[in-house]
Image (cartoon, rainbow, N blue to C red; front, top):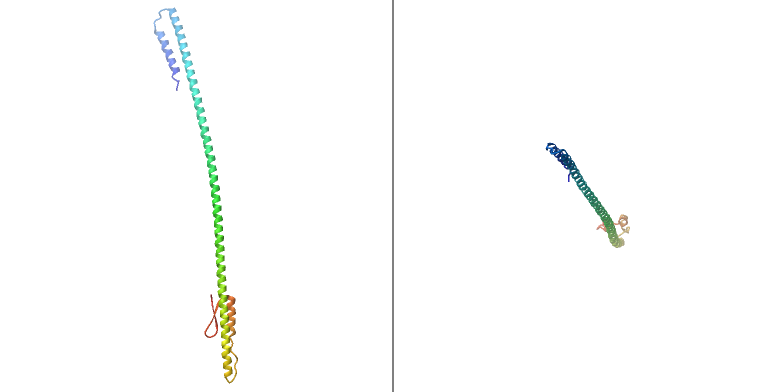
Length: 207
């Protein structure tokens, strides 16, 4: 609310009254002085009342501004407090979320490590079982090969004995070539499989 027009208005009113008095015919000196005095008193009373009204209006306006400033400050403080509480709650939620995510990752890593350990252990057990079965198979095959070689050597010796006893001159008994025995021992060391060929020699085959 603006009161800038009050002072110019009062000045204009005073100028108008002074002009009216100056242009008016003076009825008499005493009456003129009395009217002038009454007019001055009236103007003074009017100016005083106007001044008091303006002061009261300005006071009310100032009190209204102060109250509004107080409301604005209180509203700002409430907004700041609410924002601080919301920020603290958000930080707590973020901390809890990060903690849960960290625990979940640790648990996943542990489960993955346990699964990998179990897989490696199972794979190692399977490999050990396979190697054990392969070793048993090779041992059985080698034992069968040795028995077959012994039987073949016995047959050869028997045939050589019969031929020597029926012939004019005894000949040396044939025996299994040394290379066959060496091949058998070599196959046993390498873990390979040996077979007896039709010619009596030993042939090595990989398992």
